[in-house]
Image 1: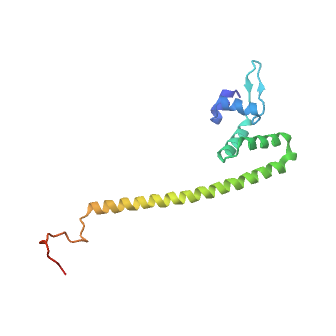
Image 2: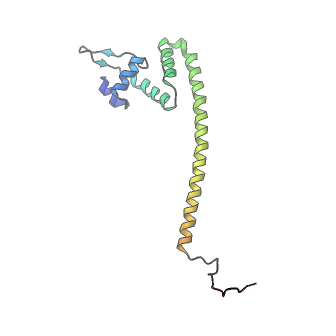
Image 3: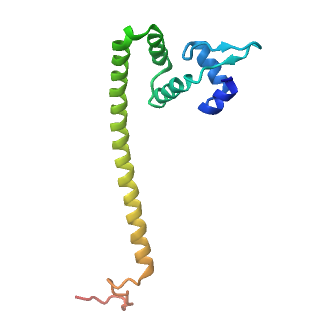
Amino acid sequence: MKIGDLAKRTGLSTHTLRYYERIGLLPYADRDRSGQRDFDASILTWIEFLGRLKTTGMPIRDMLRYAALRDEGEVTGPARRQMLEIHREQVRTQIAELQECLLVLDTKIAGYAGGEQRTKENDARPNTSRKPLRSRPAGSVTH
């Protein structure tokens, strides 16, 4: 698969794909007779996984470490698992923090919605809870 096709299928730019290849996140692609990159379709699964790591906030240096371990084969399985377990805990912590933020936002939005509803209700009906103000002669006192 040519780099342009890979870009279309992954949503990454050709520049990003070349960069990932240059720094070692992607294996070097075979070249065709004209010297153009020719990626194997199996790279799609790896790129999708890298995208998930990126989305969850894994730094590129950690992705590079994981990729290097992956290239070393099955013997590095325990080390890769440990990396992913550590990252998973970081993601869980981030999700918990985001859920707390979401709760604050929901509460704030509900407060505004309640205020809007009260305003709409008060605008729609006359205020019958208070008697209208009456003019009184100056100096008069009511008991």
